[in-house]
Amino acid sequence: MIETQPKVLMALKNVSYSYHSLSGEIPALSNISFNIYNEEFLAIVGPSGCGKSTLLSLIAKLNEPEQGTIFVENPDGMIRYPKVGYMLQRDHLFEWRTIYRNVTLGLEINHQLQEERLAYVEQLLEEYGLSSFRNKKPSELSGGMRQRAALIRTLALNPDILLLDEPFSALDYQTRLSVSGDICQLIRKTGKTAILITHDLSEAISIADRIIVLSKRPGTVKKIIPISLSVAHKTPLESRNAVEFRDYFNLLWKEIDS
Image (cartoon, rainbow, N blue to C red):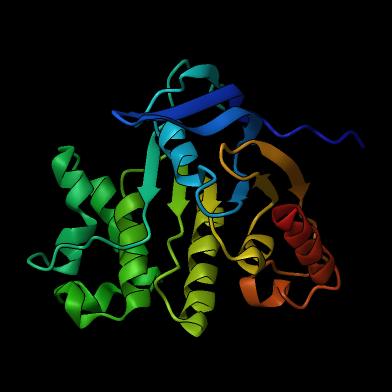
């Protein structure tokens, strides 16, 4: 049986970026090259200040590389940049809007309040226990529920790539395990490509298909580690019990600490 190679959705080739100010130039990323595959869950780790969030900004086209290129190959063969959904560390829900009006905000701004899109939002609210809270304000929800609402708001616009910039960092440990499991399950179910930035090595191992390790600033790709765990279901909790988990953790720690 011949194994098919995963489809490359996006490829970064020799990408570099610096920040400029009156006091001078600060190199953030240097000669970054890696592929992003269709429907994969990719994690990016590295020391603080190594350019992880800058890298997401380049992928999202919020900034353009100073050197190098970002190639796009869409699964449907069309020549277009994939739609990007960006989920930040904080949920940024608006207190003056109900949960329902928060999760439909992107659709409203983009004039896409069609019946099909709203039906999908209703499905997500039901699946993730927020349907009965649709008329509540954000302050009436727990941190985990707010993050679920933020993800539904992001998914409502049907992005091709989800960028997750430490979306669980503000949650307590128990809630973090639960919410990260729910969100990752939802992302995999929808077949989206996702890129997660995290400082939590255990989180990266338990969630990702591959982990990219960046060096100290300016960030370069030190190592790319495919993750394969002998577990029936790759949930954040079950993954931590895999026999390979400790070896992956020690390998990542060694790469980041060196």
